[in-house]
Length: 303
Image (cartoon, one colour):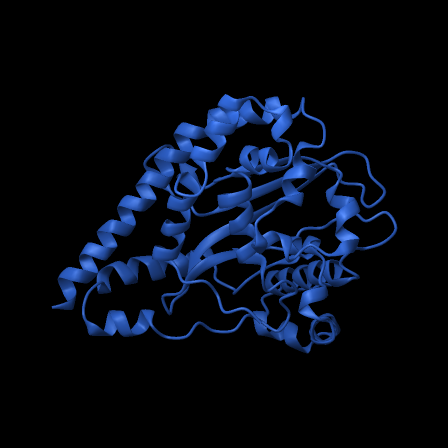
């Protein structure tokens, strides 16, 4: 009796993914036009960030505010989409563009998040740490640099034929575990997002898991597997909230940027634009995208 219900759920999931691909393909040109228009509006993105949804706002530390005030562009690209019918639409690339500032040398900071499925059937975003070239003060207080250093050590061991668990015996691993343990989670800079990794799920493992899950759809065992508790993140994860924050940027703040801006700058916008903004938020495309993510993968357990 479970087979039919499981197959229907799988078909609904496929339809939502197809809609997400088509929506992105159709709206991307207009979002790029919007980006060009935004460039003419002073302080647009700092104002939007100041009105950010709680998933983002509660992660911003007082020391982050000055650097975030230098943001002049935010872009979200669903880089694994191949046309309107193929590719993984839940994988995203976040790009932040900054004006000249006192914090870091980078004009643009990009980070890719890959939607992957593990062999135990769990799905979510995984990533690789990204370097930020700090000028003086590191807003992450060393966490990001340590995460990058450990990642590079893992790649070196992999190239030399070592097991990836061998990294646990290195000083870099032990130092990062200790640093994470002694850093309060509610005091971590939002810039540690660029060090988020999530669970280790390779592209190969994900492809095999997706194929296996499709073969096994239906039956009581399938439903029991999906109800199991997710595994905790690795001890070296510097930003456990990374998936939540990345999804909030890509599915809420970025598509709803004009509406967030209008809540603080209503006098500068036309009544037509305000009406358009109020109609496009909430139950619109961002609401649909959140449903697609919820249906196709449970959130990871946070620290």
